[in-house]
Image (tube, rainbow, N blue to C red; front, top):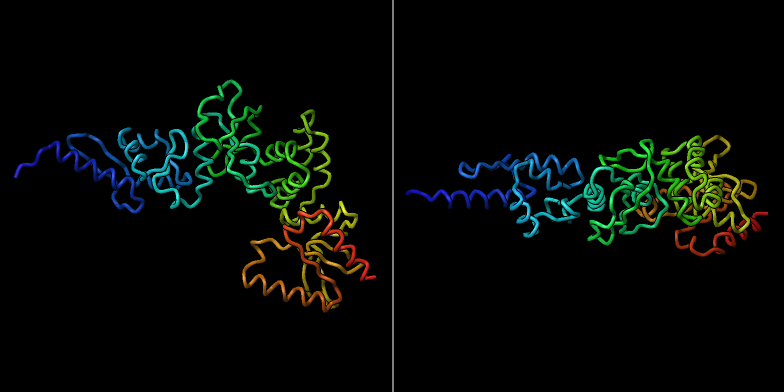
Amino acid sequence: MRLDSAWIRRKLLDQARWWAGCPQGVVSGWWGRQGGWVVDVDGLRRLVGEQDGVVTAGQALRLGFTRDQIRHLARSGKWTRVARGCFVPAPEAQVAAPRRARIRAAVTSLGPGAVAVLDTAAELHRIGGLRATGAIHVSVPADRPTMQRRADPNLVVHQLTLGPDDVCAVDGVQVTTAVRTVADVILRAARYPAVCVIDSALNRRLLTEHDLSLVQALIAGRRGAVVARRHLAEADGRAQSPLETRARLRCVDGGVRPDVLQLEVRDDDGYLLGIGDLGWRGARVIAEADGRGPHRTPMALYEDRLRQNRLINAGWMVLRFTWTDTLRPDYIPQTVRRALRRSR
């Protein structure tokens, strides 16, 4: 039986479309003698694995897809459009890091010179302390129009003046350096999140004490610099989480500043009984900041109880605070003050 060549081409195209949209495909490509095209599915899989699951239209074309194929895959839902000219070749729910995929797509869609900045840059550097939002902040060169590509309501386009030393790459995404990111954020953020950002960057060793002078230089003469300098003066890289920073600031504001952070308590033989997040050594009082993540597993709860029992038996009073407690200006300092009075 003789088969119609047009029918063969259609069947091959249908198969190629199906395999291209299927993450579990195992073929390296499809070819059609009449159409003269090749689709490199394995190449696509490798590429999206290196790019948070994202592929651009230009990259897909170079892998052998046609524009009609790309449109068909997007309309059928096999590829998810995450920004102009950027796609996730799978349902977005299957992507390991959909947020990072959207950030990468947003930066890529704005062309050469686009850089993730402000809160988005802090997110990519994994600097804590800022409230999570859906906004994606990207800066484009000053000579580029910013009124285009505004279809995504979460995309916020800026035109910051950035030098070559202000930009680096994080997992292949252009982003402001940790120093520049901290400088830009603390000029705009309120006191608590600003100090949390500085503490987090210091604790993660993205900044050093020397780098704080660089931050000072970057904020000099800019709007908000006077307040931002006060934020820098309150920073302490020993804080291991934004919750610890907020608890410390509540104590400072309430007149019960802790003597030390990460206080090591040892017995007479030098055995480590525990480490307190905030400590008042003279009164033998410790305050623990209990975040949701580290302290919610059964093993973490078990270890917390063991440590607390050892500290109490050694004559220390242990207070525990959560994120909700930091939302009340008076609760933490009043609780600490009562504990300090009892110890006298």
